[in-house]
Image 1 (cartoon, helix red, strand yellow):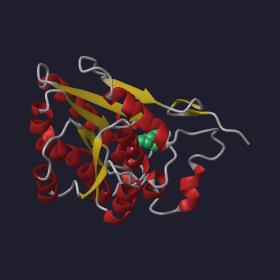
Image 2 (image 1 turned 180 degrees about the horizontal axis):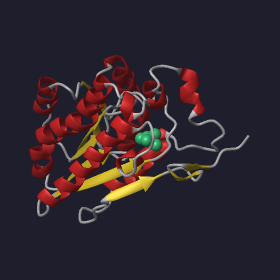
Image 3 (image 1 turned 45 degrees about the vertical axis):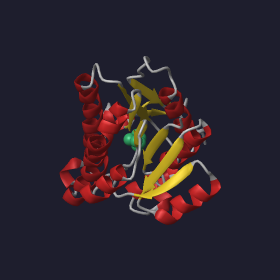
Image 4 (image 1 turned 90 degrees about the vertical axis):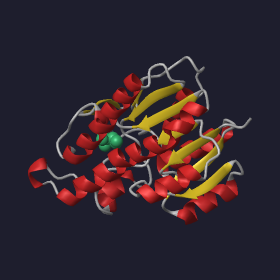
Length: 246
Ligand code: 8X3
């Protein structure tokens, strides 16, 4: 029996790396995201990956994906991201709404839709990709930190509510990860500002580093629940303590 893993936000970054990694671990992976062209390329490269068009902000889209699945053993709620770095005093309601809609409500929609199948599998795993922004707050992080704190809280709540059910509830909270798009989206396409975030930092984490941690959590024996795994590059001792060279 091949186990099925659903990964949201799988068209790039941590989601794509996780889809590849879980396929290598022997899962049939449903790589779900809005950008179908990217998913098709990924699926053409990795036979165990099935592309699925998904918009986590749409009830209909989430229901269509859930309805198309025979089974679901693993759900990786990865779709998310940050928009803007304004102080709260200048926070833009539309940015905050978008961050809530994708990170928080997107995870809620996916969780509601797939939880019955995860439980039915007899050994389900629900993994929430949060962030260190879900554990600490930082200047300019207002909306993103609030959304990630909400996801962290949702994860803790789920673990309590589902105690006794055959499903593990895991949180992976990465720190500084250099991906193609995260900072670019945060800075609304300003590549120079996005690049500065990682300037002089020796080896920020890569998407593969996080996918490796996710795969480790998911592939523990069924009775082992990794409640929360915080992963940062060695150069980042804390949110405000980053070693930079040059
Ligand atoms: C990304 C990490 O520190 O930019 O989730 O919030 S941080």
